[in-house]
Every structure is written in structure tokens, then in C-alpha cells.
Image 1 (spheres, helix red, strand yellow):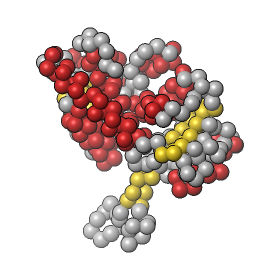
Image 2 (cartoon, helix red, strand yellow):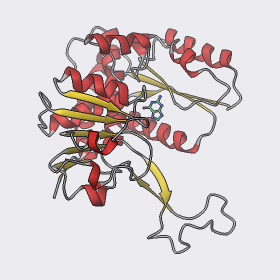
Image 3 (cartoon, helix red, strand yellow):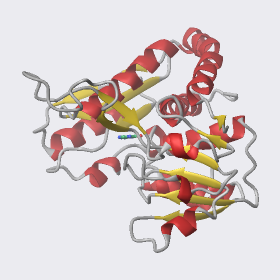
Image 4 (cartoon, helix red, strand yellow):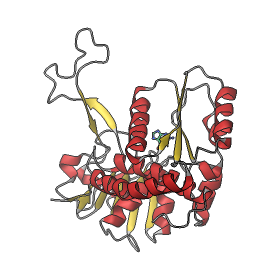
Length: 307
Ligand code: GUN
């Protein structure tokens, strides 16, 4: 039986630990930290993620200063919103929820965010700081994974790590953070040959491919630590009497459930430690977004210690 890496519990603990500080800062500085999430369009999964982020802000006493813009918003209209948020003294963190509608140039928009308010750590300046090993705002999912590994005292120095998926949001920054912790990371992807052989070499395996149950037991070294970044919604064939068929009058079909990129039932018995989905990395990502916002606030108000 693998040890369950409980991201939900750790996220809750980190958030609870911050509450008193936020109240003190609010009293001393006249305002709480502020996070602005820019959501464009009505992508259902993104709407759910944004709601989650806003609810977490509320629980923490962080001001949620987001905007929801229509799907047909122009590049200029969104650029103007970002530039206004850069100037807004109430705003410490800015996040543009991805993916954006196809007609928009996401990279150009992300590059407009003030790097000191870049709650997602996706601005080239913050990614450059990460490459150079300088302090800076880090991408939330990889930062959350590092915090979780640290909390469970999973050793990284000298270990082989394999990251599946090379996205700028997760895979690339993850490999760099593992490298900074003295692991030996390999970044594997859809064109990697002999993939199972590569993943079986991993002491720490991070799956971020967005394919349900992609990582099988044969891809995992017995005793490995397995981190599942996937959040995939699939038909719930077990609990849905219709067997996943669209139910009458409901175009979205039958019941669904969340599964990760790892076949949990098959991998859990041979892993030393594993994250569940849900309740693993998802809550840590949201918490690191809040941590980045708090770090920017402290920097901007020259509050020394945030530990
Ligand atoms: N879409 C899915 N995850 C994320 C995230 O962490 N940040 C942003 N900006 N968009 C996302």
C-alpha cells in the first residue's frame, strides 16, 4: 500500500496558517492582499477552476478582484484590462485563466502582466528567474508539487525524476524545480521513444499529460513516488445506470467523475507514495496561487517575513 500524499489536507493547513497574518496585515496596512483572475468566455472547466480560486480567496480574507469578459472580447480589450490591473494598487496578483479563445494571442497577453504581479509565474521574466535559479514567482502547480514532496520528506537530491508532459504551465517548470532540488530530471513527452522504459527509471514520476489513466503499472518502478497532475472528467460508468449514455433532455450526458493521468487502482499497490485525484495536486495549485499573491503583497508593502 502506498502512502497517500494528501494535498487537500496540506493545502488546508497552509491556508489556515496564513489567516492570522492576513488579518494583521489588513489592520496594519488598510487592505488585504488582492488577486485578480481574468476569465474570458465560458469554458465550463475553467469556470469551475476560477470559482475554486475565488472561494479560496474568500476563505483566506484575500480580495478577489477578478473580471469575467465575453468570449468574443478583442485582444486590445483584454490587453487594456491587464494594463489597468497592473496599475491598480489594490491588486497584487494577476492571473489570466487559460486556455483563452482561439482568436486571442495568449502569449502576447501573458507578457503584458507586470512580472511582480505574475501570480501564475508564466511571464518570461519569472521563467527566466527560474532557469537562472533566482528568487521569483513560480508556476503554481510545480510549486505545489515541491511543497507536497517537502511536507512528506520525500528525498529528491540525487534521485531520478521523470516528468511526463512538456507544457509551459507544468512540465518545463517542474523539471527545472526538480533540478534546483538536485534531482536528475528527464522531460518525457509524446515523441519520447521507449516511454515505459524511461518512466520505469523514475524514483519520482510526475504525470501531466491530460490523458485519463495513461500511466499503467508497467510504467512505474516499484517503490516510486507518483505525482498525478491530471484532472480528467470521464463518464462514470460504475455509478451511472445509463452506462454513460446521454440522458434524455440533458445534452451534456450522464454522470461524470474526475480521474487523473495515472491508473490509480493499478499503480497504488506498487508505489511507495502517490497523490489521489481529486484531493492531491489540485488544492495545492490553488494554494500556491494564494501564496504567490501573498508574496507579491509582502514585496510591494515591504513586509519582511511571510513565513
Ligand atoms: N488553466 C488550467 N490551469 C491553469 C493555471 O494553473 N493557470 C492558468 N492561468 N490557467 C490554467
